[in-house]
Length: 333
Image (spheres, rainbow, N blue to C red):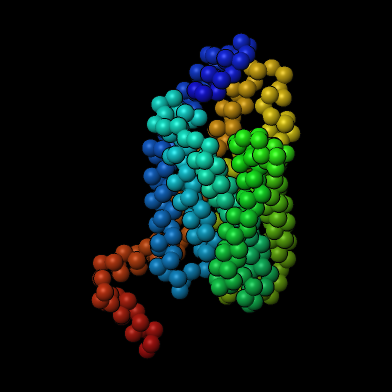
């Protein structure tokens, strides 16, 4: 791999055998992801979006957040093959991309990661609001749709600040303005704080509030307006899965920020290990686009009913389905 070639040429202490072993393992993991996780993740994300948007009337607040995460997952699905088929991840690479493509992929990856983490965070907080004040409209579907729009806008604006550091790190030092901003560690520190620390603290706070509500017995506990009990299990599982899959990636950003650069390590022997762990952590981050829709499909009991209604409408075409017509008549009578 390119890591071995670069550092083996500059320092004889790099173990070429170790680099080759890491390269083979990473190549196998990348191919497994492309053959299994990528097609399933793309199909399930598209299915989640289509099924929910075709049943807008029956969408709930959690559905809106999961649709938002599915759209971000589709973006990750599109970025993944471009990166995983490059020489960074596999020996049998299909292409090499230039700095412009690298910056574009980085922007899309960062935006998607921010959308996923903040959608998970706000889902936790809105779930608490729904549990505590079930008859208010603070966590309504209408408000949640606007919140998701702000999430995308905020992710783009947040990525712009770190984008400046990355761009200046890849262009000529002749530009005085950029020569002062060639600091990739600063960009990683921004993403680490905004993309991980803030959501982690907010999710922890939301879970403390939710546990307090569950322990307290109130007259609202039997309120019919409350969310389905399965939503609590889905929320808990989604938060755990997202943080398990994204934590290794953000920890590599933390290491890069604290150490200043991989060259900070006194022995070049650790460089292949660092880059291998960084690539594996990014693979885990890509896997969130596969795990989340699959988990939503299995744990949301209303999804199957929505899917069946969509398939019936597709079979019936423009004509109204007899089943839906009879259902409407029963409701009217």
